[in-house]
Length: 237
Image (spheres, rainbow, N blue to C red):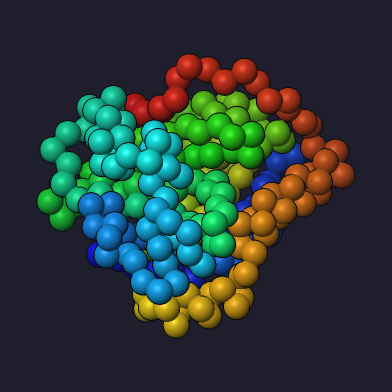
């Protein structure tokens, strides 16, 4: 199973001042046990291509197979008997990538029973939030934005090809984010079309993050310096 999506990312901050934006782009979703099936003329696996996917961009970041890391994470949260695992993420473009968040959909039979949300910040740090079936809320325990303190809770919703993450502080909705996708054919023709639209995709993601940070700063939003990262790298309940 491999899928390619055109995407729309939505972000709206409500407190203490409103800040809203929409971005377009793309992402991929595939069975992590079938990596070799992703390869084509324009898309490469663990080697340089116009588009590519590298094992070392995820999990233990050592290039080894991904399932072992995913099962280790799930074991911490007492999730077992997992079969298929699908990873939804951004690929590299011209060898570069930055993934603010990737989603690992973990199946038992035909049912998704857990999602590993693999979160990265622009300071090179990583944290995972494991959402189990029947529990969509988790405490915020990782510094992502310098304009949000490490407190409050996240609410995760997975609706088809869309993911919605809301952030609450003292019961008040502070931030609403989502990424939704429209599936297109996985083909070199589709990838070529995407490259024409987004030739510097990774750079544009990073630049947009910093542009929005500047907007928040200019609006006088309180700035939180990077805290010392705790030894805890996984959040679950």
